[in-house]
Amino acid sequence: MKVLLIGSGGREHALAWKLTQSPKLTKLFAAPGNPGIGEHAELVTLDVDDQTAVVDFCRSEGIGFVVVGPEAPLVAGLADRLRDAGIATFGPSAAAAQLEGSKGFTKDLCARYGIPTGAYERFTDADAAKAYVRDQGAPIVIKADGLAAGKGVTVAMTIDEAIAAIDDCFSGAFGAAGAEVVVEAFLDGEEASFFCLSDGKTALALATAQDHKRVGDGDTGPNTGGMGAYSPAPVMTSDMVERAMKEIIEPTIRGMAEMGHPFTGVFFAGLMITEKGPELIEYNVRFGDPECQVLMMRLKSDLLPLLHAAATGTLDQVSAEWSDDVALTVVMASKGYPGSYEKNTPIGPLPKTGDDAKIFHAGTALKDGGLVATGGRVLNVTATGRTVAEAQAKAYALVDQVPWDNGFCRRDIGWRAIDRR
Image (cartoon, rainbow, N blue to C red; front, top):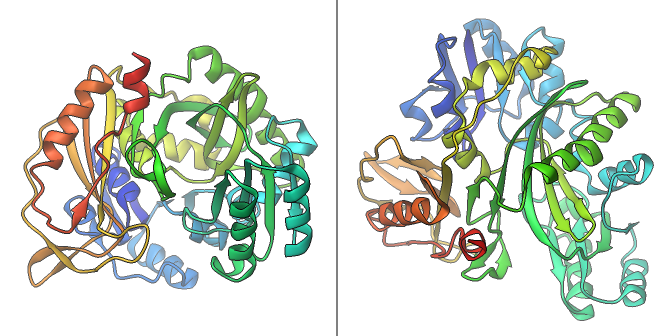
């Protein structure tokens, strides 16, 4: 089949790389894509916010399947528009994408269906939110309700920090996303990412990962969209995966169907493994970035039929096979990220990689025939190994070969898993 992939980041590069390995693929298009994706797909100049243009392109090119990578087009209803046009699409409806588009919606769903998560309150008034924070004490978590591009969440260790985060939200620092604020209890434990496909009724567990959100070594500094990840997550034992399915994923699928918003696509459950077991921090309704990169390195099965089964209600007819190897990715970012940074800084020729390594492009472009960095998170240097330490050593050896003066990275991705061993 002909496939259109929507997106331009490291996640989409990893999906493109994996999709092109499918014998079922006739041709892959990507909109807008990036130079790395361009190695695997025909890049299309298409405004993905213009849903009519996307549908028209699919009809003119005979696209049989669309894979939507990022969350914003899903929340905006692109999957609905494509399905209405009779085009099979991987990704939830706008109503189901509220699981990521509104943190308050997800917390209300948890309360309604008994899904374990931190206690919370929703606020549209800053003074009321601050009064609640003072009453609850710190540490406490402040979240902008809507999409904030991986930002908008503050784990406040002091009351003053929480008050400042509330002011940020209501002052417009995150645009419309901060018009409502969710204040929730701080959960103590170890974070993990759990991925699961759904076709609205059936769930297929994929794999686990752990990412490093903070910008500095030792998990210090401000939160980012993710500075690295590895898979599998040692804290997600087979028992913990089973509990996450039964206590979190399956009630969510039942609840969403009951509410009239059956969920099709991928659940990316951000979990905190506490003394009580798995608790839901948040849902994302697309593959994680950079978690997708390590998942695709470990996936032995053909990705295309898995995504197509989730989109067409036939998930009970497929299964996923995974490598026992560990995959680890290091994010190379522009100096200054997650604050302001210089754009269009030159990157020299990237080192060659073998079967056990891959450099995914996350924020790059071609300018005057050379590669430049256009984003905050720019390259995902990824490797596999029998252990986390082996995958880590390979990834950093590759990082050290990347000729980019304006780039930086954390030097301790995977430390938690290595300490555990």
